[in-house]
Length: 408
Image (cartoon, rainbow, N blue to C red):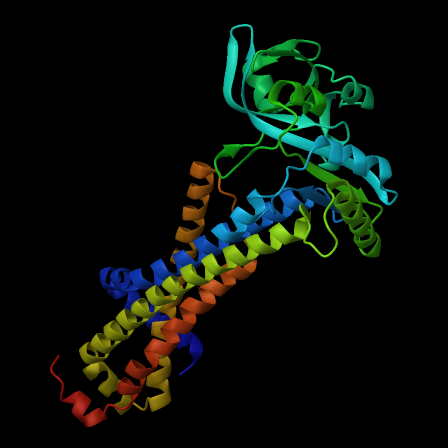
């Protein structure tokens, strides 16, 4: 039997039993849809995190009181005993680091932003040193960024996100106008590029002010995060990190042989940790999807066995007319594979739709990759072939004389 003829017979058989075919495919569809949806969302999350945390560049590292990830209560208690990283630490390192080509510091808190009769709550106010926007590759689309003069004089000037502009300055140019941050008055000098939303959280609902002005309102005793830009990645980054570590230990009087009283971290640490977490999540979800595929495969095998039983006389006639065992085997294997492939195709569509719905509803990023679609289709087809082997073998093993005696 030619392969083309086997496909034709398989499609005819599936079309004649449409409802049974659809019900049989549910397991495969659910399994493949789960794989596609999970892989799409995990890829989207990984892409987003990698983009966000590497936008500072491979030559930027941070100094803070806490590491970016704390995995247990013991470590948390240990880090709680650390002294805060203060603005004085930042100025000391800034003035003495020879391998640092850029440096900034920031603090942040939640504030109420108002202008005339307009107001926005749950907004983030960020205390920035003058180099911080450039260190974070944050483009100023309108107006200007901060200068050293703004920082040195604790000027009451502000850079705003696009949400603040849209909500507090509808239909007017915000540059040169004033707003209040927790009652403190600032003059808008710049509007930052729109960053969109992630995980349902807007990234544009913020106001940036010079860090010294921020500390006058919220206090100078809270910990800051210091960002350091080295000359380049690689050995220079390592040397700059070593120099900053020595300066920080000296400023904070860390005893020789004792661990650092601060955290020096490269962005890759958090990206790598997040990749591990999403990988574990993907593995668990993939295991659940595999269970669904196995259940779907068992249903396919059961349906194919029923089909063999129903078509016993047909098989006997075909064998009597010269069909070989491998022809019968091919026919039923192709039918099983075609059924699973159809389920896989529908599962891919459902998975992509589910991922898109999650993205639209929750703002969770998603990224469609060709390999995940191909993986879903291959897994579905392989499931159909694997679970179709026994029914195909049983059909091919039927004695033509016994098969011809079967009742119509």
